[in-house]
Image (cartoon, rainbow, N blue to C red; front, side):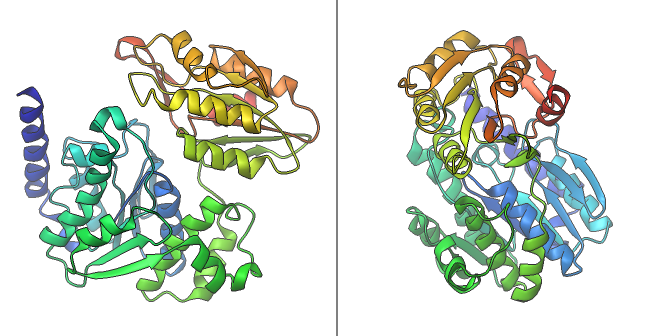
Length: 397
């Protein structure tokens, strides 16, 4: 009964916010991007391309809130804040003269109806991997939450010429295609086609930051959207080549004498992609944790196993323990560490990072994952502690 009442509450808030702020999404081209990984980076790439093309944009993501030239770091610990936030954001975008609103859409935001009454012109899904299983009850329900965004836009959006962007290389793409149900144009993208077509079979380059497999997939998604807006490849390529990256996403803090990288990776799939990209010709040391609060406990030993596969030294530490015992979280990660790597547990995250930096030598890489650009560490009793991963690393170097 409580959960039902909670859903009605969130639904009513979304409906009321739309009315209070005068149906702002009607006056913008609104793109919603969902998926497990790559949402923030894809949106940042799209935003950069649109700006290069002379468009005024608004951007709402887990990294930041941007309305034209006004930028604010997202320090809310929520990608899609509630209480009228999104409708107010869209109204400000309209008032600032923005043409495009780019919105990161999460499965938990969908559960809380925060996408409701936003009139989307286009939606995109990047990929689908197991995540938030405890919150949704199963992977199938998690998948359905993501698919429901496409279904809602297909059935409810009044915008003309709706666009549905689908990752052709993802095994779950047909669920999204079916949800579009012929109500608009389905456009496909994939890393492989992007390399073959836009990058001339890999002979053209678009910069070191975008050269990893997963960022090439993000670039493919961004290029597909930009092309749908009439932006030609030379301008897209120019923007991609000059793109400086996203805070907390494969962010390089130091190159020499050893490399230090921070990344938001917090699932087995994303963690393996980060380690694989960084382990070439390098000795890898990792600082690794996992979120508490009952969040996806299944993944903890898997992440430990991946870390010991790629890293010569694994330092386990706090991430966001919430009300769980931090020692138990680290022990569950350590279960997966198979002895290939030296493993130690240091609860204090700052001390763990300090140890990793002290161990590193010339030619090594230190990968610090889990927090990225997040502004808080969530601990027991609903408390949160200010945290800045980049600043912490810079102070310790």
